[in-house]
Image (cartoon, rainbow, N blue to C red; front, side, top):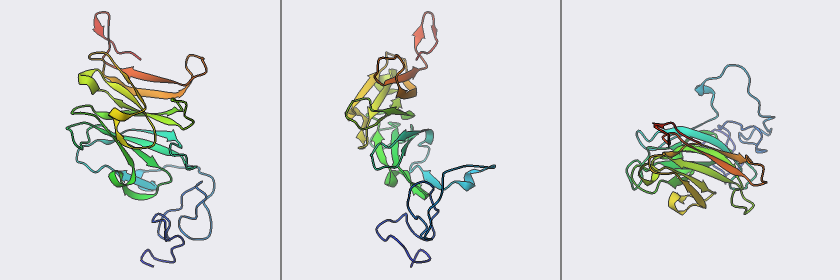
Length: 219
């Protein structure tokens, strides 16, 4: 076998003898006949101990500037996570890209080929400045997650509610836009009922919101 032994699942490129066993996924990743146990960390670790590394594809795209565990977005039984690359570009300058990575992951991977991409709408959106877990905000039974684009709308900023299928953030489930100069979407939080009305809420940070005589920021 080209990977150094008997490949126990030819249909899955991430299951092979030379890969790292992932804990908690109920898969024999390294084909040794055993499963990893409970996922626990201990001792002093460095980035060299990582089971997986995901690289951005563009110079100065700022991949990893934001990240969050977002739950099982694609409902395959394994939790997923989001990565923001707010300076990444596709069709527009500094539009920003948010990536949804489906777990489990191991090895060294390229984000552009191993994740769903969610693209800022126009130049200088800086989408992906923040990402966050949201829960089921639109009531369809599937979880959502959040992408912040602090410069959307020429500095108004926006928070986008997204699901599992990538594409332009202009076509997302819903969005919350700031006022002129707010830079809403600088920070995000969700997956809770903040006002006790039984519905999930989202919290949007706007660090340039003007109040009174100064730029004081707001949530």
